[in-house]
Image (cartoon, rainbow, N blue to C red; front, side):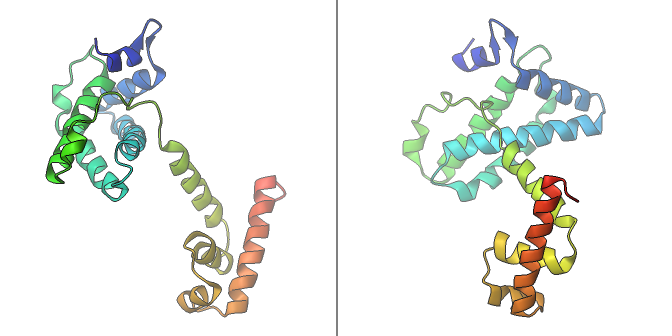
Length: 193
């Protein structure tokens, strides 16, 4: 067993990531669409984090490679052998997609990097995705006159003048919307409202 495989199946057995991904994947193969969606979502978080570590100078390509890898996993799902580590199978598919990317982008030096040394399932991008979802849900509780200025100025980085132009609000309405919206969000987070 490779050192990568040893991480998924150490003396204590399969990792929690391996167990959960395999459970969702196998249930998905059995027809449980929700479990398969959960598998793809969790896998995407791990793959995104892995690809960002592998491609720090090509972050703009990460989402494309991620989608290609998820599609390859989906298309090759019938080749998975029950009893084998799922994470090792996914890792092999991911390696091929990375090598395809390196070849296509003439990054010959990257072809010689030890691609198996990084552990694909060490980290997940779930926390940033969860944070974005949580912020989106919180903002969704605000009226548009507060939510839109916060999104434009605080999240998209527009100036108050640009936000006013985009939203059709006056500059003072943008400032008031941000102030009142942030105050309302702080109260919700504290549990005051």
